[in-house]
Length: 195
Image (cartoon, rainbow, N blue to C red; front, top):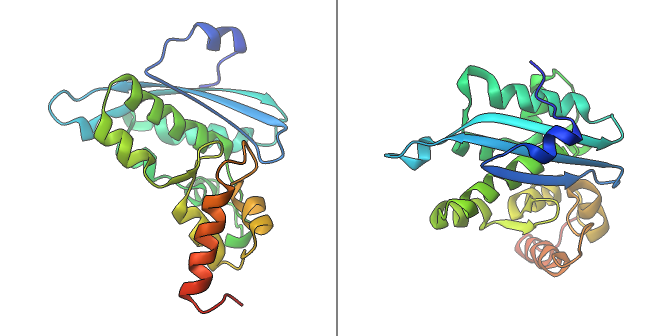
């Protein structure tokens, strides 16, 4: 089943949440929409009932976006809590791609989907779930968390330039650079200098 929306369809599509993200090179923009099947008794059982997307720009990220859509839409939809835990490596493994962890790259559709979930929490005034979903986000433009930065440092990316290249942090509005440097300096101090 095709879950890609044309631009015209996307503009009129009503959704419970919307998110967008650019590729690290800025050549591709992905927009995502989610419809949520709400569980009125147990909000943690809310599920993504439908995930739609639109890709503008270069087509090289299409297969990753299609695989994410398939994962989210299969079996009646994925629980939001599980969707928030998805990582790039999950999508790559579903595609049977053998990529060294140091060569892993951000998948804009995944970041856009997480932004759509955050947008859903905002729209429905779910303040606690919103806080949990965003409390560790360091770079809101690229949806990079402190754990993403720490993992990159552990893989040897121990300069601001290297971290930005791998995670995308600091490549948008630049307001997160101080936080990225702070995490980097904390890690260096904790380990007596990273070699």
